[in-house]
Length: 323
Image (cartoon, rainbow, N blue to C red; front, side, top):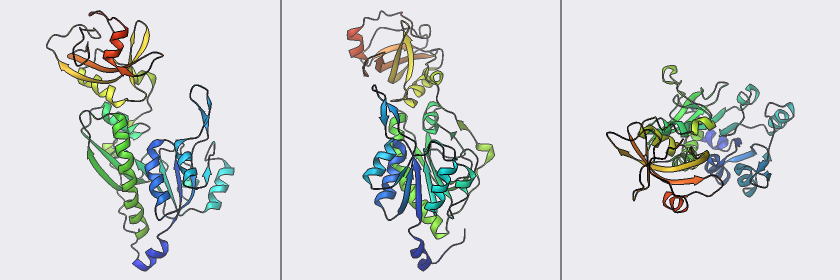
């Protein structure tokens, strides 16, 4: 990208941007664009879908914010459909910004805007390409993570890196805490990236194929606790899925979600999954190399609660097996 002079930059400083996103992670970026000196031509998000106990149609968080900001909202079932592509071409965007949108973009969209399609990805690419980078970075015990703004191509998170920022990952930081922190961090980094791209100062960096790792979609089986694993690995799984979808085990055949815990070393723990006598910090459960002290749970059909409240309503004898 060739560098431009200041006078030309002033003429180009408000490119027509189409924003594409759906869940809460995308909100800080949309708010930054919507309240900033940017020309947001439209916001594209997923269709309204049934939610809650009543299963009534609910708008995605991005749509709700876009309406408050007075921005045009488009909700195509498939962005590949000819009808949406026609709308997209008529909007004639100079740039597309994508974050947690939920659909794969076709080549027709990726190649159209003159400044390209910028994606906010919450990992240090090429690590953790895929659907759940925040969760897997915690589950796998990473000590650092970050945000990458990349120029999209047709691959899965394989485009050239425009700008990247690293941050330590707290030893007890949960998915929810990291999600909120990196969403804000990504919005700030996006502003820098847009400025660099418009000025022609962006330095495109190819991703190193040797460093590629993947963060696949979470499944029900991903969240199931294996008490035969090491206590640190179980601890990381719990915080990597807290508060949602939440790691779980079973108690008397019913699901028991676990939201927070801490590790307690032990040279000769009981068989994996065995409950020990409750302590002040919580309920100890044996892993292969020590104990997990469970602190917050959600029994089937009930609300999330401190484990002490759970134990007041349910007598658990030491020696009982979870899972």
